[in-house]
Length: 278
Ligand SMILES: Nc1ncnc2c1ncn2[C@@H]1O[C@H](COP(=O)(O)OP(=O)(O)OP(=O)(O)O)[C@@H](O)[C@H]1O
Ligand SMILES: [Mg+2]
Image (tube, rainbow, N blue to C red; front, side, top):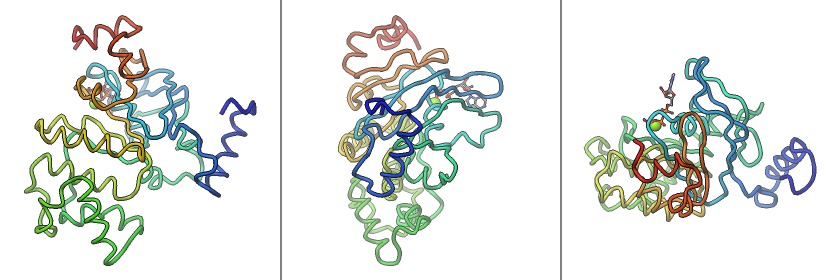
């Protein structure tokens, strides 16, 4: 954005207008960006002054010890913390160049464009098929028979179709944990998000289900931009293009995944990626 030499605010509003008229014409390279983002619960700063951009079609891994603010950061990116008691933010998060907190920005639309998957699969108390199309129905993206097509397409996409095609009207709670997580992924994908936020999506899964989810993450980019929190450093190395290391309330280091693991620039990063810090 700086290349144009115009003030940022002007450039952003031009981008926002153009992207509404012709979404493909003037899309910023970074689908999502945090600018000088500081996050607090009450008086306590959880993360200070984070500047980061998420280029379109890439996977970014967020790593760091427990309590370092990874989930708080991730949840802020689609406004999941807005209603949490004591939460405050300074700075901004830009989606396609426009603040996610901008006036006129609809929360449900932000969540449709920036989907999320949690550590524990959380199917809704409804049938398998209704789970997949829940968001599609709510956003009136499809209806009637179209919903069957959406359900089948998304279940095939995540590799669940054969396992569930004869029990689409059954409860999802009899599926295995890995299958439930894939179902939640199908549900998240069904509304056509631009960004997917994943908070330790495989930590409750066995190695085979983990591999299935990792393969899907790679297959889903470049169409989708993914931000994934993981304690599994092998997973960060396997799937991500770039890695952010959080520690002690700061984004300590951010760079291409290969370089960050092979030759970290900061001593804390080095200790963490070499298993010397919990
Ligand atoms: N709702 C909340 N109210 C107050 N403090 C909170 C809240 N949620 C998180 N925190 C605090 O924010 C800090 C960061 O927590 P966060 O859950 O973001 O860490 P994390 O890096 O995701 O940790 P983990 O790896 O264990 O999931 C912690 O000190 C935590 O106690
Ligand atoms: Mg967490």
